Length: 362
Image (cartoon, rainbow, N blue to C red; front, top):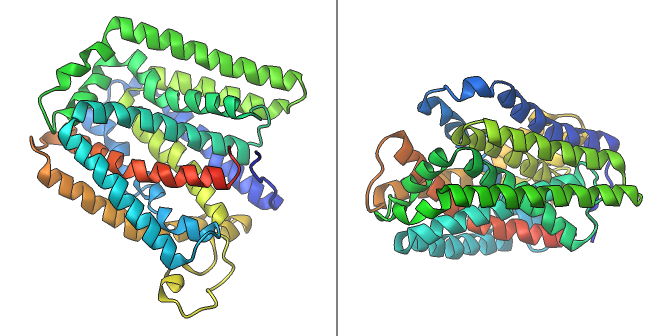
C-alpha cells in the first residue's frame, strides 16, 4: 500500500516546486491580502473561476481519456472509448439528477468534491511530499476527510451567507426549493460543523504526530501540518467564491496536473502509424519536467487537454440553454458553470479513484 516515489532527483525537485510549493505561494499571497479581498467587488471575486476555464482548473480533468492508456492498462483506442462511455453514463445520470432533485444533487456535489479534493491532496502528500505518517487505510481516509473538508466546510463556518447564496443559485436554476437548504446554514449547524471538523482536524494531526514519535519522518509531517494550518486560515479569512476559485486553479488542479505529468513519460513519437497515437505522442510532460522544462510540460498537458476542455465547455453551454429557470447575471452564470463542473466531476472522480487503486494509494 505504497505510492512509488522513486524518480530522478531533478524530477522530484520539479514536482515539489510545482506540485507543492507553487500552491503555497498562490494561497499564501491571497491570504496576506485577505482584509482587502473581503472588500473586492463580486465580479472581481469571480475572476479565478473565469480564469479556471483555461488556466489549470477546467483542463485538469480533460486528460482523463488518456489515463488508462498511459498507465499501461489498455490501448489508446480502448482508453478513449472506455472513458468516453464513463463520462456519458455517469455525467448523463448526474445531469438528470440535477433536473429531478436539485437539493440532493447539490448536497451530493459537496460530498463528492470533498472526497475528490481530499484524494488529490492525499496523493500529493504521498508522492510529492514523501509523507510516511499515514501508512494505513484508516489514516489515509482521515487525511482525505480533513483535506477535502477544508475547502468545503470551513467556508460554511466563516461565511454562511455567501455559501448559502451560491447554493441557492445552483438549486434555483432547476426549482424554487433552495429554502430546503436553510437548516444547513443556521447557527446550530455551523457550530456543529466547527466543533466536529475542528476535532477531526486535531485528531488527524495528533495521529500523524504519534507516527512521527514512533519513527516516521518529521519534516513531511510538518509540511502536512503546515498546509492544514494554512488552509484553515485561508478559508476562514478569504471570501469563499474567491478562495475556492483560486484554490481550484492553483492548488487542486496544479497538483493533479503534476500527477498526470508523471504518467506521460513518452520519449518520442509512437512506433505505429496510429493517427490517434500520433496526436498525443511526442516528448512526454514527465520527461520535460525531469529536464527542468516546466513550460514544455505545461504545453504538452495543454495540448492533451484542449479537445476535451472544448467538449466540456460545450456541455456547460448546453446547460446554459436548457436549465429550466434560466441564469441571470454573473451569479447565474457561475451557477451554471458549477453545475457543469459537477456533472463532469463524477466521472472524473471515477477515473482518479481508479488511478489511486492502480498506483497504490489504497
